[in-house]
Image (tube, rainbow, N blue to C red; front, side, top):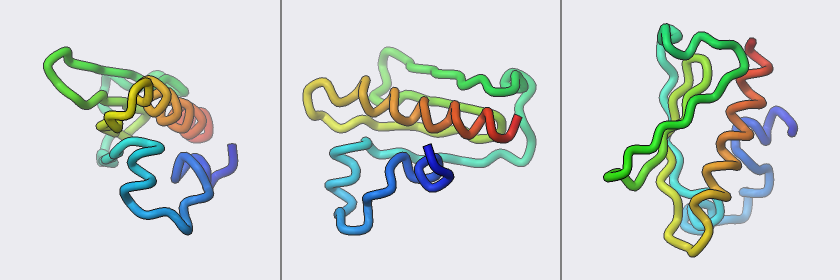
Length: 96
């Protein structure tokens, strides 16, 4: 995975609309915290949290917390979440 791939999950978005990107990768919103929370200080570790009543899944690594709202395409959710998790794992290993 290249640095650009880590940042965007994929590097071929230049010609795609936002709807096309979200259909492929889901809707991802990330926040960078000023400090690394105590419970995520394990270098290289990505935490995944999914509450049964919520559509979104949360993934966090170091001081980055992302929520992913998967597309409704059948079978897309696990693929999209796994792609984001791989990207965050790669990022976590680079900053560890």
